[in-house]
Image 1 (cartoon, helix red, strand yellow):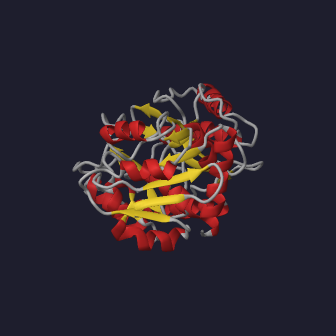
Image 2 (spheres, one colour):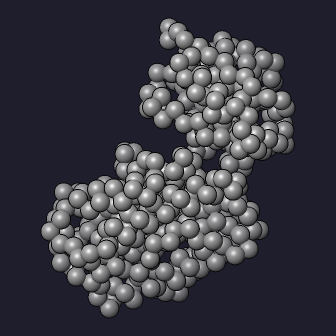
Image 3 (cartoon, one colour):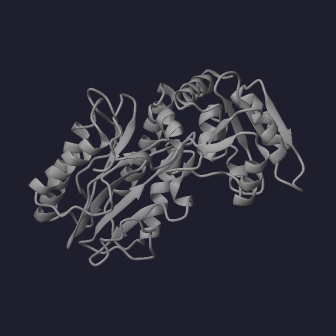
Amino acid sequence: MNPESALRVRRLQAAARAAELDALLLTDAANVRYVTGGYAADVLWSSPTRIVAAVIPRDGDPILLTPDFIAGEAAAVCGWARVETYGSLADAPVAQLASLLGPAARVGIEHGGEGRIGMSLQTLDALRDAVSGTLMDAMPVIHYARAVKTPWELDRLRWACAASSAGFAAAFARPRGGELEVDLAREIVAAGLAAGAGWPAWTMPGWIGMTSGPGAYDRFVEAPRRRRLEPGDLVWADVGFRVDGYWSDFCRAGVIGGPTPRQVDRQARLLAATGAGVAAARPGATAAAVARATGAELERQGLPGLGFGRVGHGIGLVATEPPSIALHDATVLEAGMVITVEPAAVMDDGLYCAEQVVIVGEEPEVISLAPTGLASI
């Protein structure tokens, strides 16, 4: 198998052995992409008709089960020695999956927190009846293995963030006024694609966040509107792009005609809270400790933090993945994990948030390199 896939499979197998699981059955797009080292099949994942599954035994070679018409490309990309196929759509390939799992007594599946199983509940029930062992939650195992990024993964995350930075540079490079929010969003996406992104995040339902103008600054995760931008509007956007499946996710803002002194001050205070969280993102710290550092600085700066349950999250093959940067999350950070830090405040004159994407290290590395101040546009 390709070296990247081999490294990831070994990491998952070690985590499975530690959890006393005999095998893992992966059917979610992100998890299959993870273990195959990059096989995408994006068109296939857009349809729930067919199952793609990876069986990872606790020892030995993994097995990929695919529809027969994609098996050749899948085998070429991931380099796995064993790729099984099916053709008929009369029934889901339950018997094949049970056979591939064999005598495994404890089979980990994507059952628990933030897990998504790539089959219907009816198929899952049939699989429970068909396997010889017990299907158990493996999400802690999967999240642990995926949390520390390989150098290849970090490269893709930097690239995706560079695409977002290019989008913001295009949006804030010249004076604005009179355009619609959706027009500005199109320019951001076009610039990100030109910078090498493979897929704009706003094609996903409810993604690219954008808002502008008084009375609308609480639209934190809403899509661009056909609203015309006017002088004095603070224009805020949260942008994500994918490169080889790996996401960026951060936000920036500008003010049409330039920010007022009060807006500049509020942004500076928000950035101080963001910086406190970034500085805390070091190996051995917990996700909760990063949240505490961020919240303490928000309070010191006198800003009313936006209460959406956390002030950041992990990022990788999913735009938001564990850990949550929140007081309830005791995950211990390790070098090579990637998180975001995004305290926010909604005020009468703007939505203040300049999310940063951070590689955890003794010196945390910020890879969301677009300027964080309020742009004059």
